[in-house]
Length: 493
Image (tube, rainbow, N blue to C red):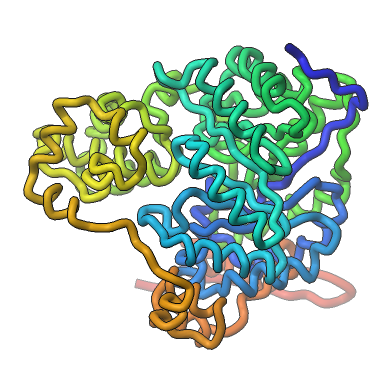
């Protein structure tokens, strides 16, 4: 049943600084890149701006030498009217289970540093874990946006999504989000499922979130709008399209063509596109673009970033021709494990195992610890019970599985955590937990983040770009009687 949109108004949540840069820049956007455009993002009229994820902490500290807590604080000083969001899944460290006390402290520090809302996912859409996450967020004053993650498999039927939405609607959440992180939705499935989710959500507002892996993301947004969704997640170019979220400019333009009023100031945002386009050129970072439809993607459902990683690793081994075989094996492994949703961490668990099966030349001759822990039930009873019985028996009979079976889910009190991890305060202790004391010390020694305040016009930027080019280059700049010549000559051999 269609839920009418009586106002005709469409609102947007911005994902540029979080999902956009994760999808296209592998989380390599620094705080210095973000800050020059923060006030503009705040003035644009977004319902929320997503800026952080638990998965960012290690990356920020180790690779970017960027303090993620300082990122939140600096953005919060500049974004004063629009709620700031972080996201979380069942585990904070992505591939490792986390003691509840540590997760609770992290939530407390998110709220203290400037986060207002928490978008919560569970990789299996498990209501029991949803409830724990919602209660934890509520204790520290964070509003929860609860994701219902879309997937394609025999078990992910219409009735499955009806039941999970019904369970989500019973929780004390600010909103429900129908989330398609793999870009798997088609216009047809959107038309079928969105009315069911709106019906079961009852009085809970519903957001729509999809990706553009198959080139259908923007079209699915329009279908959702026509069906009654009034809040759409989008990113700004050049951090939209490809494997990222749909472009705000495209979705807004098409929504207006259908007669809707879009509640966002696009003129304020055009310089944001210019800024990040200049940063992309300066740092040689990818630019999102619309993709052609790929009928294989809904079969293996491997996220775009993982496919890129497969290409890189197989290419280094001289076995790039094995990629189609690896993707076919992903389909088989996923079916044998009961069709887990291909999101972090499960997409990594079973994508890596499929690659090992292919490269070793024998299925499950070598098995990762993560897959064995999954089979042992460390990631949930529903997950372990869904595995094909003969395969599960084979896995659990291995010596390594018997060894891992002795492990216990981590338990640590807040007092034990504070005693174990060094740091001047809880923020520092959490950074040491995420990234290690040595990496935190190196980050602090690195100093303030690089300033990108004039990325699109800086003469320094121009010089840096020329320096990266091969061969001779000549640039002449004339202004007010001043002539400046920049030249790079070919060295004599």
